[in-house]
Length: 380
Image (cartoon, rainbow, N blue to C red; front, side):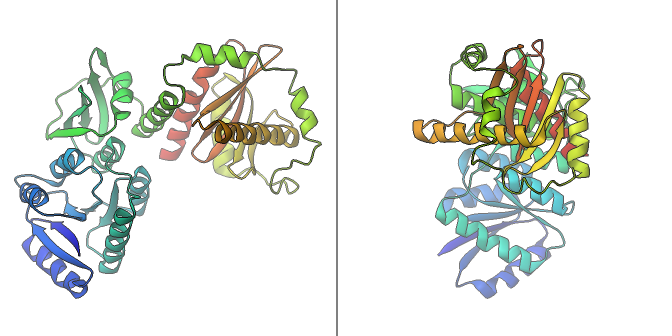
């Protein structure tokens, strides 16, 4: 029998919710708590398969409860209740993996559906567990002011939030953006929350969305390349010299075609705006954007058909090499042309980017630049 823990300080709401859920007592048993402190005692004494919690509670609120769960029960599914929810917030939190989200007043049918899905996922082992990223997004959407003390594998960092904005971070000798990117990469975190922002100076100007995307990219690079330096990777890739994609142009005449490439579609407003923003940086000479299934999304200064086919071929070939070799990379691919220009192929937000930059622009800086622009586009 599954066990469900409901945490809320409003007695009437809690009792009414329990009464409604009792109709399904053949599926799970219900345990309740009036605040986070009581909930922690329950979690330590009874097997719990899923938690539903409010955020605003006395003694120990929902934020502190989530922080405790992060260290004691990191894979426990959690449904967060809030009066400030929107479908957009729910989608973003779900993408981060750790939380489900439901808006007050509660729609019982929606809540029951989330409960059953959460318990089913937990039993099948597909819950990704607690992540710093999901917790930070919750603080942003709730416009929370607080200080987070994060510990992981002997490391300690501090994140400062003012009205939902991450204004500073400290870790070792680092502070500001570099410290934030490092902390967000940490796995299996222990989080302590203090309900006061202990910092007044804003050293971080970048939006949280950019920080989460960039930290994810950095984490992937560490996994893929271990201790290999970027300079070594680029030196190895420099051995692949192409003359204006000459060798790849031959492939465009082979039996390798993108899905639907015979039907040219106009750029969407979103893709067009994103392409313009990338070109406006001044570092990019040519650009092409593809969906994961190979559909053309936007292009600037490229021969669409030839280059799209070429980039798709390179990506597919890299994935085949990955599968055969049993490694997890590559995150990005750099092709060095004979005129010292480089084409960087990388994937962000379900989109494949092919970006040509001049010899004076470091190829390693391109994914971070793209991540920042994509994050801003998602916020707007």
